[in-house]
Image (cartoon, rainbow, N blue to C red; front, side, top):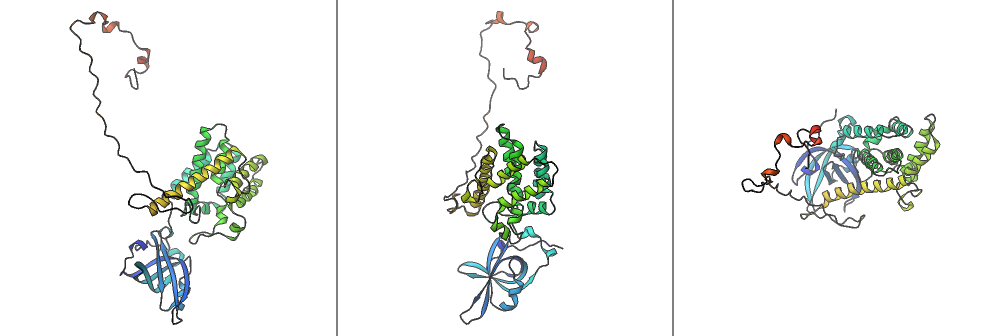
Length: 367
């Protein structure tokens, strides 16, 4: 049975000694000046990473420190070039049922079940029977749904954590539905279906956690092609699915990267395809830059230089709300005694406003 992890990388201070489980991110071998074998290890959990060394019994411990496994290690935290370094003395791989993966891998900030429920509400809102049943069939395909819900959306750039693929697809899907409502000329069903399924091929492009990497089919074909191919096979299994609708949806999948240099086999040639490309790009960059600011910002709020995006970034500060102004009711102008009295009608003779019959309390009235 999985047990909760209590000691995290962030807790490892120089001088600390004991044991704790960590994910082995990498394992390398080296030789000392005297020819002895030592191991370079990178340990990780959801809080961060730490470099580790094995000096003694390296030959015996190497098989127990395989990359992508969770290992209970015993040792102490030393200092190397002013940075903490864990010295491993003993190691024992954990059995699968002992591992609670969210302790070792970052997960989406939103609860999984909440996002799944929102996704299915969005699927049911697709205003076309054919597109709705194709999306539903794809997400219910054996084993595909669990991968779709669990995988990250990328190795490192955006939504690179457990459930990230679901979070990104849901976000782009909701954006698509909103844009389609703003622009009635768009086919809302096609755009929303394409948005939900645009990255579906990533369930075959990536290897599953804990060591998420590109699979051989992922490198040779890519998720755009594999997603389009899968939808083609799936549509053939649905009686009477229109060929034209499949073709349009496949175009959205194949073109959502926008340009061939970014992996798109074709450029967007439908309004819906153009919109999907920009929404996908927007959501990916929003999460990537937001995460970068959180991880790299200095005391003034500025991030380090982002090499891919070519800029520094700063989060907009929260401005304090202006103090509420007291609004005293206006006082009537003072009149001299008897002034204007002849213009006033007695209460029983005053005309009724027809609106008062429908709104006797006067709620929401401006005049």
